[in-house]
View: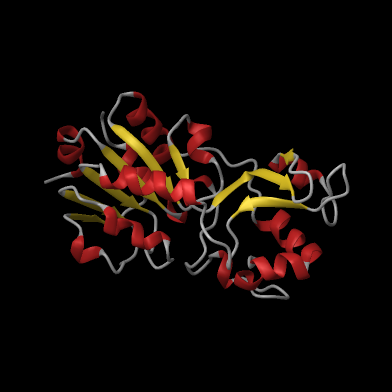
Length: 235
């Protein structure tokens, strides 16, 4: 059965995506040959993006964060746009994403569960005042609130738990889906990869350039760019 046929017959579709969904928007992924974790910095990126590093090397964290984690000029690609269309037409229940770039919302999606947070939300750790991603990009050194407190991005750093309400919403959506489309993810990052275990429906489709540990559990595996595949769907 083709993806188009599965989409046509499904009424409660959930999309679960990773970094590969945004690479066609010019945002690098993490673990591919040219990915973020293969680049050379004074400290390994995985260390920089840890919660302990944020508090002990805050200026170094923000130097990397502004340089590599704030793709504010990026625009939604065909995958983001098609998912927004599917939601508007009542075919898609939710998007569950590991990405923090906000491109799903920029494309028009409303019901989005951001497992790892968003660069577009930042808050003062002292008074909780909110700041935009643009505020962070314009700041220099360690960004401080008007009250003098330290501003922290609302992204889940290594060593931090996922937001409970977001997790519950994502799990409930996946559990109620009749078709789960998994795309652009290596399915090696936990706990996010474990979310697939909550799917109770019939059909799982995987769209990913490389092999994953879940390939054999999927009804259909498509080795292609996510935007190309979803962009060709009619809904």
